[in-house]
Image (cartoon, rainbow, N blue to C red; front, side, top):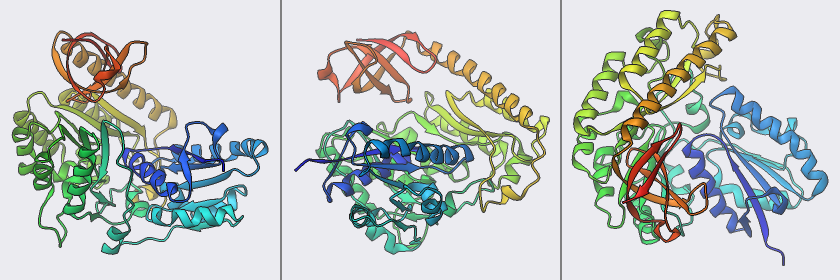
Length: 438
């Protein structure tokens, strides 16, 4: 019998990357193995993001281009999961007649039976919310074989309700996994050869703060650091309002904790931050940045920034630019505001001209490019420890990441993949570094 193949296309954040790994594991139970090309696929699954309108529009565009694939392979099954699926539900089946099935963010455990129904010619959608502790018992497992690094989801959902953000409506309220399950998963990963884990959640800093857990996030980090075989620990995403002194102390105490933190600021103006319902001021944010630098002097910061939020004045935008210069992010992910369904910001008067928004975005990108270049040049001549992840861009090259989350390409044998390697940084590039083995 021919082996059935599934192409899983992932859009959006690391949470979706982790979910795609779980999707692949679930589909093995009904006979599907992953493939990298649509020509080999018996099924295509789009694991989607709806944080921004453009991401959602892109998914509809991809779905309609799938008509051509169906002419080539009429038996091709097409499924949509993730946040767009959760938001749209059965509407997706109505808008896209050739779509086979739709599954929401809380329904990965139902995927095998949904696929079987689709194979029988039934079109199905399941997007029910499970917003209580029973959701933890349905948490899908994922394969442990292979890989240098692994994402480990420690919590799902969000309780913050930032005025622009759709996450609480498509991912649900915040719920933390049991620490014993997280630690067992990481031990199994270490036994399978994983050297680095990234702990994932919409706001990892608030892990375990609800009733029923005996440890918080800093305590969990310390327990993960004690697991033999794990050399590096990363986490994302952190909400600035919940950065605590015990978490900052982890950067001083835990050698395994990497010298990088993704700390989304979103805006540099107190007025805009208040409209966004972020729960901190500019000065609060900068104070925590300085405390983190005091604990780990070589720490690198990355961030998310929104431009053109409704009511953002030129003065507000100038404050965002000045904050970027003050923090000196080594990278930032900048976006033009787009209203999302059900959010409070969608009801605000958005009077900023589209051209003005684009100009502000281009200014942000130019400032970030300048700062990234300066920080990269500062690293040239230094020796950094790199966890080698795979083959590089050119023949004979391998690549890996520094503790500060910088990609380094350098000449070396493939046998070094999975090892820690000292690398002398010899050249800076816009998005990565070049080096040579020490």
